[in-house]
Amino acid sequence: QHAPEVVDGLLQHALDRQAAVDSIHFNIVISAWTKAGRWQAALDRLNAMRELHFVPDAIGYTTAMQACGRIYQWQQALQLLGKMLGPSPPVASFNIAITACEKVGHWQMALAILSSMRGATAQADTISYSAATSACEKG
Image 1 (cartoon, rainbow, N blue to C red):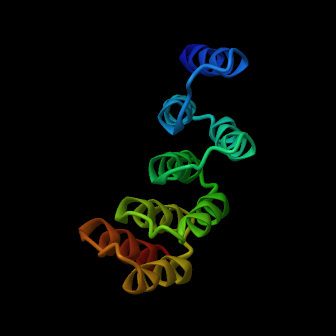
Image 2 (image 1 turned 30 degrees about the horizontal axis):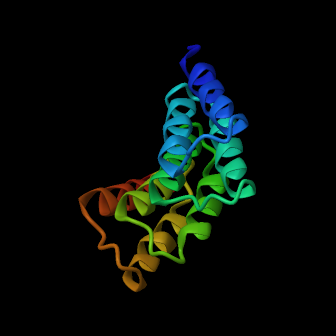
């Protein structure tokens, strides 16, 4: 469970030394915090990325959404999806948001997200429809 702290420390060390760092490095740290179940730390790194004038990519956002969705922080997951809507999020991001809503029984929101995919580049897939259907069954 110390891996996220080590990876985060390495990134911070690189930033302090003004080494060449890019979004991939931040994504690795966000992923490490997500795997450790530390959603707030994942969000903190995503926010720090923006504060340091790095542009988070779909991988960073989706990974942070995953951290939130796993522990019923569906509102946070939806906020992150909303921040991604400019560059048209991948289907995985929509699926994470739908699944986060499904876990807490917010079937209306799950259906709204599914519906919003019609206007996006991402095409709903089996996971999208299964999660939305499950949300309706729970609601």
